[in-house]
Each structure stands twice: as structure tokens, then as C-alpha cells.
Image (cartoon, rainbow over all chains, first blue to last red; front, side, top):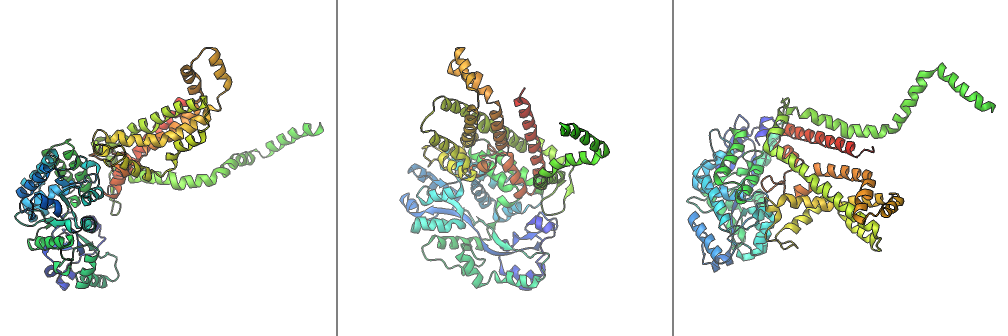
Length: 327
Length: 298
């Protein structure tokens, strides 16, 4: 996003935002990810450059039947509750937390623990690349430490580093794993596989927080009809467009526009989405903090789980990579 | 008789009359024959290579304005531990892509040549099969074979293991290259003078000494061809690594091919990518030069 703004390829939407009142239609965290400061690399403040069309949301899937057998009847409310549930699952001979980390998806676990403790607003500053912020926070240190602990305690699959996300989804739908951290994009596959046993909740914490971003559309700087394009961007949050976005598996800006079937995993996801928006708890992906952050998080989480580094080394590696762009 | 006597004289006479154009045309004619190929080679190999050499001197994200970087990108290739280790991994692959396949191919070819089997066409097809499969398909198949659900019944995926991932990926290269090396060497054995084998036997050589003193030296040219093809494949490896591990776990299987791809398409560091690509191509040329010197007929 920053690069296209810096190179003058997309048009500022500031005037349209005011004209259409988008700042009032959308919760602030939904638009913040598409604001770019004048330096072209800091996000989260400054002019708006794109308008969202459907959101993604990362939270925790769970196998309701397995959870019920373990005596877990309600989603855990705190990280401590969540750890107790993982321990219970392990003791019962179940795989507590399904994970595929060949593409670095353990980064979700670290981020969810981190932002649930540091607070969404603080965590977002880092993903936006704001000056003087560091990855070395109490929340992220806890996140890295927990990930390592869980790997060592056997809460994670032994070969997580050798399995990709879709491999993990398949295993989870086949009944391997009580919990599974993943995004709404896999809801259809998990719902089809586990049917009514599939459940979802926002990551436990004092306030509901989640990782998520939107598909968003910008207007080219060379556009001859920017006004018409802006009218289309405004249409993207209309009830008609929202219904289509939801049908395609995305979450609409207004949770009320999503009408899932009762008792489905989608109903749980919409409930979590509503809660996250009420608590203003949506944070962009750490993986998008810089162009290279996804590759760095992939390698660094693999090294952490594989015992090749420690939480302190993990935090340093991630922050050093961030500083190359935002330092 | 008269004709033959006259002809040289006439030829000589003409040459003295107009020597320059004729000689030039004589030199240009062969060039004309290679011109179409040369044009394509220039347009699709030489020019892009020079272009990437040029880009490697700039800091450029692929879209915006580039700034002059001089040799900074090259310094990075040799000082950044991740980039340097990817180069080392590529050279390590030579063991798996070239040394092992040629070794196995030599032994197999010698065995097969010594005892002609009826099942030969079948064996040849099976051994050559990996060579005609798309490497992406090969990667997908082996990823499954190495996984915990695979037919090997592994306890956990080798591709997720920091120690095993690299040799596991390398062995796929061995599997792919062995068939090619075997066929090349087998065809070469057919061309070795049978009298050499007879002489060796008369001198009292066993099969092992026959192998070392007749077969291997007789296959010098074929070994050179096999080494050239497979070493280039090792240094330029991309598909198998990209599909199987993406360079992970950590950077345990990262090779320049995958690294260059990431630098261009995700990191937006086109200059650094071109510098790494240039270094890789120069190193490849150097290795090829060395190989040619080593295997040239004395």
C-alpha cells in the first residue's frame, strides 16, 4: 500500500471520504489500515487511499464435540482458561492445538496473544509502522514464550513446520485437534468437514481482539472518471454489496448485513466479528507490517518452534526486520 | 590434365585481382547461417542478462523511481548471511544433483552393459521417467512422500526438520537426475572399443578394475555432458524447493532461485535480486569453465 502511494500510483480519497461520510459509516479500525501518512511507509493515519470490500478475521476454531467431551462447554474467556483447556485436551490424549507452520501461520498465535494483552490500539501501531514503536512488548514476549512452551509441551503437532495451512485445515476437519487458529477464509471447508461440530470464537482476552484486513479497492491516479469510481467504492458497503461479500466468504463492514444459518460455524464467526467491532479490536496482519515481514515471520516462527532460537531471539529478529523499513 | 593445370592458375589470378571482398564474404557466410539463432540468443539471453546486470546497480522496487546503488547490492549479496547461505546451499546441491546421480548412473550402466537383460527397455523407461515429469509435480509427490501421512510412515515430516529437510530435498534432485545420467553413460559404454575390455581381461583385471581403468576413462565425454547439465540444474534449482519447502524451515533449504523470486515479487528489492542473479550466473560460468578444463581431451 505504502509503495503505491509513494510512487503516486493511486489517488487520495480524502475528499470522497468527507463527501460520502465514510469516516462515520465505518468503525475507525476498518479504515485505518488504508490510511497512509505523507512519508509513504507509515500506515494508520493520514489520507485514505482505498475503501474496504469485505473483511477477513482470524480467531480460534474448535471442535465442539471434542471440547464437550473434555468438559469445555463455553469458549475460554481468558488466556489462562485457554491454556487450561489445552492442558485438558493433552491429558485426554487429544491434539490440543492444530497448526501448520510450513508457511509461517504460527505467527497468528504470537500476534493474537500479543495484542490481546497489549491492546489492539497499541498492537496496531506496530503493524502500521509508526515511528519509535517496538515489537518488544510484554504481550509479544508472552506470545513467543507461549508458542515455544506449547510446542515443548506437545500441544502443537510435532511436524507443524512441515505441514502447510491447507494440510492443517484438512487434519482439523478429520478430527485431529481440539482448537485451531485460522481465518474465516477456511470457514466453508471447516464447516463442511465438521458440520455442526465446528465452532469459532474471538481470541480470549479482556477485550475481543482479532487479526483481520479487508480486500480494498483504490482509484488509479490515471483514472479519467474518479467520481464514478468513488461512487462504486461507496456502493461496496451497501446492503446489496454486503450480502454478496458475505456470500463469497468475506465479512461485511456492517455485521448486521451478514445473515448466517443458525448453529453454523459462520454464525459463530459473525458473532465474533460483531464483538471485535464493538470492542474496536481489529488489528492488521503483522505479516503485512513490511513487504518482507511475512517471509521473516515464517522463518522466525519455524526456528522458534524447531528449537533453533528462543523468544528473545525471535523478538529481536522480527524487530530488526521491521526497523529496516520503519526504523 | 589441361583443366587441372589451368584451374589453380585461374583461381590464383582471381584472388590477386579482388582478394578482399571474396575473403570477407567467405567469412561472413557461416555467420549468416547462425544469424537466426544468434538473433534469438541475443534477444532472449544476452540482452536480458545485460539488462539485469544494469538493474543490479540500482535500488528499485520494480515500479517506482530507481536510485543509483553502485555496488551496494553486490556487497549485500556477500555480507547478508541469508543470501550467502542460499548460494552455499546451491553448491551443496551439486552433490545431490550431479555427484550422486553420475556415481549411481556409472555403476548401473556398467552392470547393465555387462549383463544384458530382457527387461532392459522397461528398466530404462522407469529410470528415465522422473526426467519427463514436470518438476512441480515431482515436488508435490515428494512432499507427500516425506510427510507424516506419506507411504514411508514417517513419525513427522522430514521437510519440517531443520537437519533432514536439506538432504530430503536434495535426494529428490538425485531421483530426477539419475535416469538421465544412466542413459547418457549407457550409450557411451556402447562406444567403448571392446578390444580394451578384452585386453584388460587378458591382463587379469577383475570387474572392479575393469570399471575403473576402462569404463570410467572411456566415458570422460559423457560424464562431462552429464555433469554440465546436472550442475546447471543444481545451481538453478527452484521448482522443487519452492513447492516442497519454500526455503524453510527457517532458511534451511533456501536456494538462490527461491530467494531471487522472493526478493522481486514479495520484497520489492529488484536490484538486490538482480545482483544475486548476476553473481549466481557468473559463478555458474566459472564452474562450467573449470569443468571444461578438467574434462578436456588431453
